[in-house]
Length: 424
Image 1 (cartoon, rainbow, N blue to C red):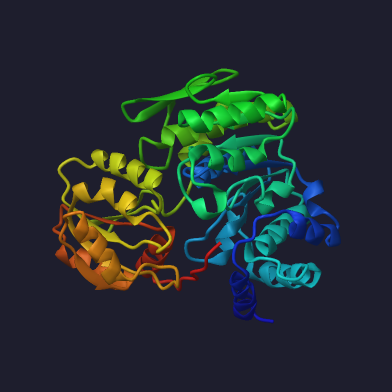
Image 2: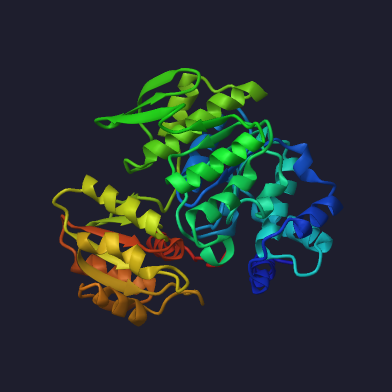
């Protein structure tokens, strides 16, 4: 089977939808010889900042000399982005081989995400990595990544998202995210809403799991363009994270705290590794600047919490006229995503990624107009990017946002690459 045929087989599993639970992944991994029990892991759950935090920690540990697996989702352009070792994406030949192996062992109606999780764990086991950073796809308690036994669990900011699966309140969603906590193992937690924090504290206390909370046990503060960190074991000043946005202080500090705590399990990252790791982290599609003419920024803010963070980050571009290209998924709280962003836009172009879940561009335009903003129905993501660049002046900023799928399609267009859009 060719790589393209393999991708079609994998992506075809999306028809089984999302089915939270650990029964199928447990059965599948058992038939593969339980590769997840042969590797040490860190789990990362939350609503926003999961990927950035995981990328920061992976870069820190890689810089410290360890062989680090990183499993994230969704991908922006290529399936191989999901499974990496020290920044290198899984080779296509291994995708073909592992797909055949995992599919042959899979129980009936195993989901896309379960298959891909099993592929990642099998690959990491084969490659004899030192540690794997596993980003939960959705939730935590019943997410297939929760089959692992993490040395440290990280919970990033929680907000309302995937409510049809996780619950309609922050407390309910926090209960799902807190499912990654292990008895007696340390937990790193970003600042949270009071209701979410109460749940996390309850779970940590029940398992006697040491809880380290941002702003309490550790903190990071911007000093001009540099970040100063005070942690559980020491402090590091004058850090320069590679990822844009003042909000990255929270993500970087959670990664730094986790790195400190991992020393108890034999993974030592000194101040030099932390400094260099943060400064060389790559995480595309999140406040990612393209040096086009005019400048263009990609950010995958896809829920109300993410759009609020993006709106705050736009303050870093004072005086810039912002031309916005936006595309969202139909199952999202579109009005809540739009509300923080539209006041910053001088012009808006509405688009629809090439995905069944995408809200049609005309429907999105109607939602924008209901908020009181005029806009243009641009059609496809590529057409929207082209229209925005043509409408922008040399000193303006084109912002592509609203969904990671929108950002992925835009990034592929800008790089002249094909884009593999799939849910999960």
